[in-house]
Length: 387
Image 1 (tube, rainbow, N blue to C red):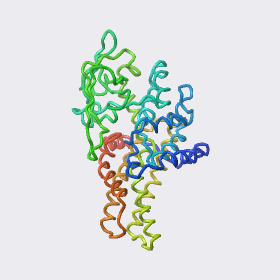
Image 2 (cartoon, one colour):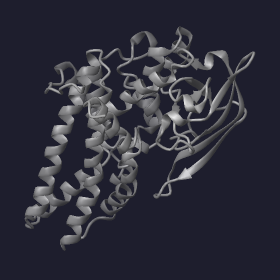
Image 3 (cartoon, rainbow, N blue to C red):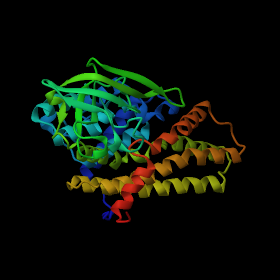
Image 4 (cartoon, one colour):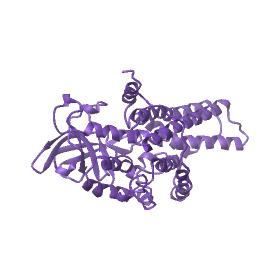
């Protein structure tokens, strides 16, 4: 059953980090326009990621023995919240720091931990995740990419799709079939770490509606991998990837994909008020609705973080927060556009319009990344004992 999510307070020592992060971002982002900051999740800037790493903020919550900051999940909560609220370009290190390194620490060998995790914390190793496949759709257990044991390790063949930053990353952690048949579902799945410079790998771009290239198809043609490419035990991939997705779904990152646009719209309303044009009641009601919903979802996300700090794995609760937050994030650009269409006030700035256009185009993807709405609601239903 799904557990209750009581109100929790972010500890004082974690909150103390907020001011330092804001001062850093005041300098780092001072010349970055809103329409660029709105791309935060997909904003790729290796220099920015390495500057964060130099502050000790990439891998903030990872153990100091492996180059991390040794802080708890609440410190990372504060850091992530500030980065995303300001629209920092975090894409380069994001997956490696949030998912790959924690998963490696949990399931990897000591040699794997020493090889990969410190490099992640230095901002020198970027990862992508190989899960989705064109034949499987949302059915992750239906993947067919296969790694066959060889005398020297594994021979990998197959295809992954929608792989963010595969064209820029150094490594991929892929869920593949190492034994059994597709019909065996969860049995026989394993995770492999793949050096993307290995011969036999082809990466092809998938452009989104904005013309951006973040997603890719990745093809493996008898790619030869060493024995130690295997993470954890052979056949344990499904259990491992389920835990990994909890990292992806549980943080405050599910609240702030549309926040730069929302802030720009609020500033537009403030500017109107300063010039003597009182915002209409519908716009004020919309602003209040969004703020109230975000406050509730932020409280839920903080409660999930408390469960993680306590050593739990709140996969169902994380799915609930992600689903509700995605619904709000997709609502914001549509609602703002509707309000603007009903009003004839001060002309909008080109930057505001570009920001609105970008978020409007990208909003459909918000309910795809980290699991589709249908998958998440199935998980929630099982957690509630309804199926």
